[in-house]
Image 1 (tube, rainbow, N blue to C red):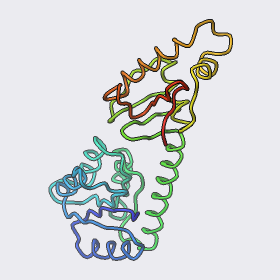
Image 2: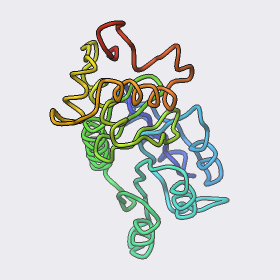
Image 3: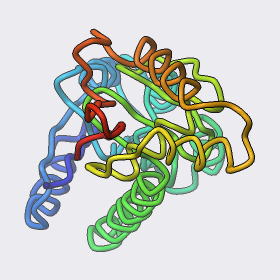
Length: 230
């Protein structure tokens, strides 16, 4: 999927040049010519930008205001463009949440190289984060923090409920008997019986399933055990 870039500058010739150059690299490029327009475009739920190229000197709201406002609701990478010698703007831009900066006039090849470097870092970071997450339908599990979210809202699970959920979702289509779950989750020397598993699965379903009797995540193979689907 092509990266989507927002270029914000009131100098239309500069925008045209950057847009042409990035589109030659297969990127999709939108343009905004003042600060207010830029903020509104980033806020638009229909648009998710991978990176913003943002000039400091803009009408209505300057680039630093835009950067600060965008950081209140988005982590999208921002590359600031500053006039040559504006050291304070460079410092303030990074303090307000910019990821990198370049001074004008700039070499378009260097700008493209900077943009590609930021996008590579972003792609690598997302890839690493995805390794620590399980996503299925509306559910997302953060394996590192052992937190579960459905439709973006955190679900409060007990340690054993979480262990059952993670085990089943990590091994889709594998049926675990109640004995198998008891031994795996509680340990071989646990003194309880199989009803412990049934109680925990029932409570887990009540927390994660819209209709517990019609599960979407944890299924029952009658007479055999429990499983999830890929």
